[in-house]
Image (tube, rainbow, N blue to C red):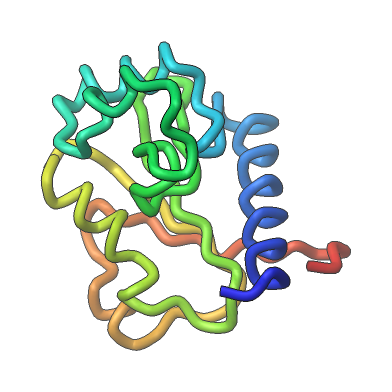
Length: 145
């Protein structure tokens, strides 16, 4: 992944996080989730993401579950329900882009996920779009990303 691609993704993730915070509840980029919310999320969902054990070791930064679960945002909606958010800022979203999110959701059937993306969905993603996955095309009008 190029530096330019990383910068675009980071900017898009910030934009979606701000959008959710301003309109719908509380949202944190995955690497900045306050520990109490991460623990609440893990306990609420009896998560098998291995977060609980790794959370105990504060030295983990780039290898912590906060940076390697392939989820961009943890969202707490107004009904106090946690939802995983994936942000994809590239030409076409493929099933490979969503593998981590779908894997976590398959491990816990009660968990919901939302995809925010900027351009197009590949045919395999369109055919997979069902039940728990909410998919929103949100562009950054007047933003140069």
